[in-house]
Length: 427
Image (cartoon, rainbow, N blue to C red; front, side, top):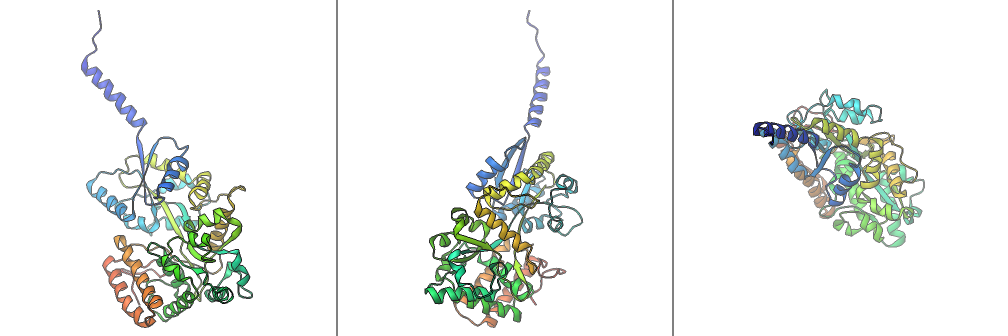
């Protein structure tokens, strides 16, 4: 005689086992604005997340879509992402509504050597840790070694001034008949970041408040002199590694990820070094990405595990070698590291530790209007440098556009401008 098990008991057992299986295989969605290109996202999934227990799914999105989704899920009370990765300025608008304080996670990364300055940035102006620094990048100069013989007398590439850079490029043009200095001023080049993070801070000590100052006029006049000895094809360049490798350009400025290929393919042909200094210091823009946990994270334990794993020294070194973003933790780069990556690492270190270093953060608080902010600087460049319109007139007119934008967004000042109550003023 066969023993009949009651259907209700089967249902209860099935529900229990199903719940257990779901708990064991609970997915951790890692949602990121960083490492979006297919090659980089594949490296994250197949290399950087390797060895992390649990079911982690890496999902990427454009920054504007990230901002919308974070807000929408908060309002709907239904969160899909357990952990998020984004730039400092992309995370700032989500405090305090969309991300939760993670002071408890600080203990997980203690002793890994994350600089106190970066951890302080991760508090996003509050008294509590809002994100853990994940990885960093910046922008550097790269030169073909053929260019070194034309350096001005007494100039050192690691301590260049804007005046020396202009003289260097002029020497090359005079001696070779070719303009070999290059900038990424193409349609998708990062030229606005040069103005916001390098030229303006170096000459004016600010970015927004000093936009139409006499020091800003001096900066744009210096830019006109630089452009006069720059390769005219710069308005077509988006990634400087390509004209460097082609030999069209001998000296270039760009994001480290956009010169990485040249140094990786031909490390003996190039040198990497910090951007120049101006009267106010050596302006530079650190690109800091952080890891945060959203409010109502569906798998907080999984989120903490991802943060712990991604900030381990061995994972940080892999991040540098695989995708060209550098460690935020103290990590000894391996002796067999590719020579080109070593050069970039040394240039980043020299930039951060320069005695006259002046940090200029990526814009904060502009939300979906970041593109309009960039356009102010791009339009100013086109009018002053490309069309030769009067510097003061252009700055007065563009300042009105900038002032309107700051008031519309209500974005307070960020470094190197001094903190403001309310919208950052254009003085």
